[in-house]
Image 1 (cartoon, rainbow, N blue to C red):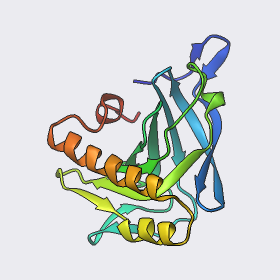
Image 2 (image 1 turned 180 degrees about the horizontal axis):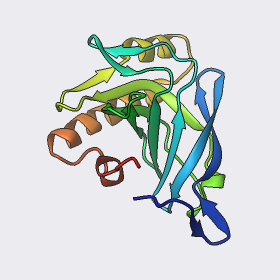
Image 3 (image 1 turned 90 degrees about the vertical axis):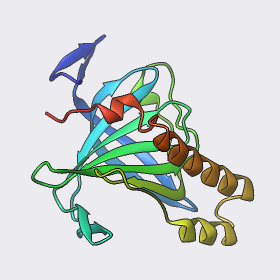
Length: 182
């Protein structure tokens, strides 16, 4: 999909790319990534996880120190999609953060606005198992006043839409589904 050292206009791809990710109320993370593709519809970045204890899902390791993640951001969608890999390149599944709508101008990734997390997540394992995660975190954020009831309802609705789209064979979006790491 993304070729090495491609040029769009005057800008080479891949290139270093930082983006901001807000977890309410005030945890702002800056991810130092590599931009692989930017279009008016989606942005694709990758980064290597550092200083990470192993992450398990149902007893299976899905992420570890040195793992790579390829993130797909879709304009005006209320989620992102990550392809998780172990250090050895083994693909472990799709992970979607439920977010406020993801926004940028035109096909210019440098205009990407801060991505705001809404606590719910969706995991899809390689065997096709899908699970909505962190409903307890969403409830805690609502009780704490970090998000509004409207945001909580939108998060639940977005997670349900992903589950239903997956059941219908329409999720993840094609750029994420067909991505091949080089």
